[in-house]
Image (cartoon, rainbow, N blue to C red; front, side, top):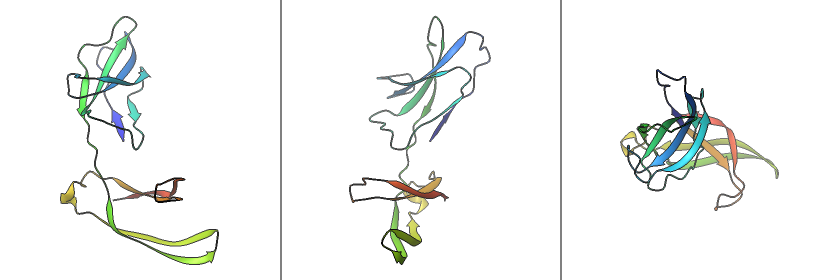
Length: 141
């Protein structure tokens, strides 16, 4: 997902943004996630980033002397976009090629999938998900 913020009005002393994961909006049990140069106002959080017990992202400004005492914050929203009834009907071209259509049924929106934006399909080497290769681009919900 994407983490985005707006720069404060007074920016002349800011050198960095420091992003933390925390257990609440005031920084309980926070842990450093990444430091970014000033001028960057977003960060892409990679898929499968472990959130552990953390519930909030905190963004602090930092100058050459001190880190801001009160952060901007946002609650972490992590939605499972599992699907049902996966079906692949393939054409047997040869042993090294697949051609066909993948179909699935999205779960109903009332099952906490209203925030799902895209679905990604992967070809894997085994049931343990080794050797993942994404198939084409994301499918928008």
